[in-house]
Length: 237
Image 1 (cartoon, rainbow, N blue to C red):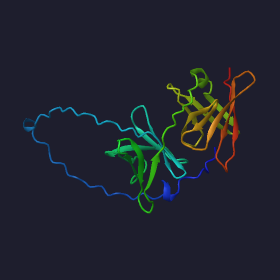
Image 2: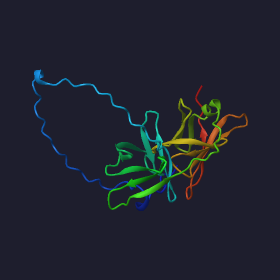
Image 3: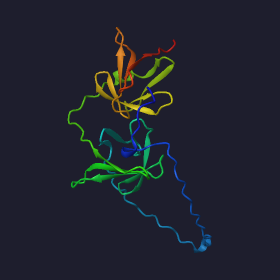
Image 4: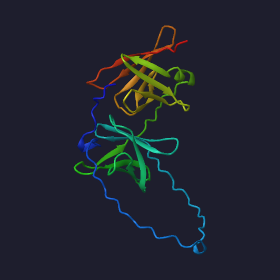
């Protein structure tokens, strides 16, 4: 997969490589602790956890699709096409900061019924903030593949000197890795064809030989890049 895929422009997304201004730290002198006899015994307090907002999903900003994913441990990630995966850390309310990009943040908006319907991405100057609208999931869903068919895809695939790796996790999530690039997630489109969650317009289609065994895959790429095929590597007996 070529690494020349366009990143988001200044007016509509994050631009990497810019200098991050250092923030001077404020040093606070700690007061010496009081004698043990005078210390108050802390009282345990029960704190009711705040309800976790439903923010996961795809958000559209012009031609760009931004994906927010909630992991099993509750962490939130945010992905832009052609950029590394970002991690969101709660600031206040529905506002989150980017762990990897100091000064950048995203704030989710709710509609009149309380449902999250959009996000505002805030960026340090000279870049501009922008809004992305949450995409409504289609009511028609494709049935998931069986456990056996999903497991068959796992393995290494050779494309020239490059080895692509497909991994099937315990929850049947399929990941796809290319050397030197971020980890991608495959989502079923139809049959043996999958879309790449982090790269709209890109996909992977698995192929079978005459015996019905998975023998390779084809990576479909958005223009001007071209599709290419990879042959499955057989394990030595």
